[in-house]
Image (cartoon, rainbow, N blue to C red; front, side, top):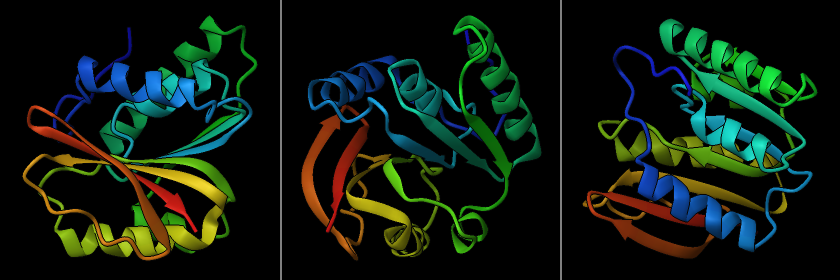
Length: 173
């Protein structure tokens, strides 16, 4: 069981996570993929990707407490998988992380706090575009009443609602 930070994060529900990873597995998006989990919180989404065959993972979390929990969770998953995983935890703001030379990423999860302004999410997607692999997938999780994220250099591939949560699958063009 993964540790959840005490406050300031919103874990993805089991229903949403099961649907998301079922679809990712069916599309064979994760095997050997380089993955980033932006606004990582506990790191649950990225660590699930590693457990399903992703080759590497960057967990990005600004909060010191959440980043520490993500590091402990990464260690826990590494032990469970025999210690052979490539996971790095970055205690940084998403914009600062993306401004560095990272990537290319095949799959990126963006699960920001629901109160993150739409313009800030748009800026993150704009900064993400140059570090995506051609045809890479960005999955954005927001409140279901949120508007579609600004696409920048992405195409909308699918949009699904799960109660008060929505997922947008964005394909790098």
